[in-house]
Image (cartoon, rainbow, N blue to C red; front, side, top):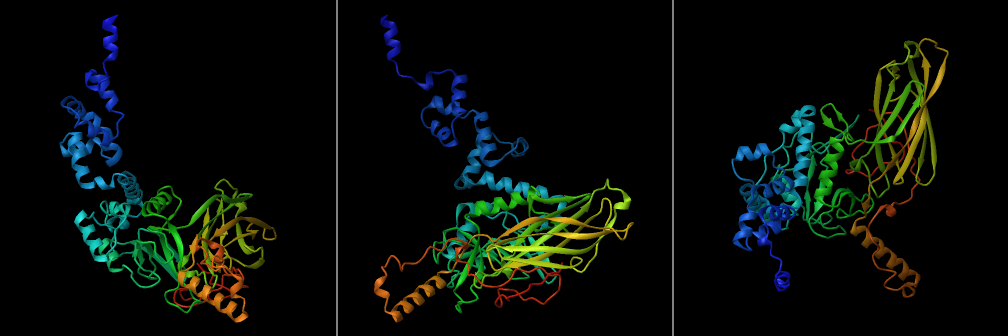
Length: 483
């Protein structure tokens, strides 16, 4: 009995466990705890150095394969220690970003080889430290981590970050390397402490990342700039938000590419979004629609939101030959967010009268504008049979929605609005009726800032010369409609 009590009084000690159960316990530890065990005692140091324990961490955090271990000719622990000494600060982001880059390269290798060839090799820590010293701001670790894998790409066409083409407009965004991004770092009012991530050599369009929380932006927020056409102040720049962090922005884009969400057309990534519910079948003909928002042709002030849509018309390959038909006309019912409806009817599509036969696909691109931040379109095509020319029938176009991304209004406009409000109250002698809380700056957050105007939504296939909305105020009325 005394011996039993003595055994029960002894404290539990991991070092007294046999090797196999001790290794099993250590296999559940994270890398930090496993490293800590190496400094507890000689026994735990010896067991913690068991190579298979480090294999799991090398694969989880650094995505290393057995082939890579064989090539390095080192133990798993030696590899883990070496990589951690170089990339340890990025252990939170590295696996996610490395997988995104690997998936993107694998997907594009067969589809867009020119784009893969434009990617630049990784940079070193010293290069990123020099960049920080030059711009006077700290870079987020997820951004630094990505450029430790690939230093963006060369300024070429097509750009890695997506393209868009209309008859008189073309955009293709390159992912900037750190030298080009440093040269484009902004300190001017309206874009203070903003770093360009992308650049289009045709339009001059860039997506920026805010490195500090200034001028109404959140730190590390990513956006397209949109000059306020009505403020008469170059520092009044509204923002279409595209991401809340570099990690979210880059990985969500890659996911859309590798899952087929963004189609590959003529060796380029086109940023059309397709809703799987947006498909309608009439008889043997199926119509599907994908859409995209164009920030470079849009503005918040005045409210002018530009969308493009790509329509695919396909006849089943199992249809009978006598089902062949030709498109005669189109009918659209266009509804904006206020419920205003416009009906448009006209011959053909984009100046063409396509013939659809079994197994054949016809695709075209058109566009529309709204004075509200969202809207939808629906309608039908009228066809006639080629074998029975007096037989006409309608093919349904499914309803598809177009929604402007979240945007923020420039702080310059908010201050101007507030000062104008003060002036009006002073003129009316009613300033004293308002408290300071009522006159404080409103929150700049979402699409509530759209100004209601009587600009109609339109759909037309007529060509009109159209300058970029960033250069001149967006015109009211009809927009260009040609592929």
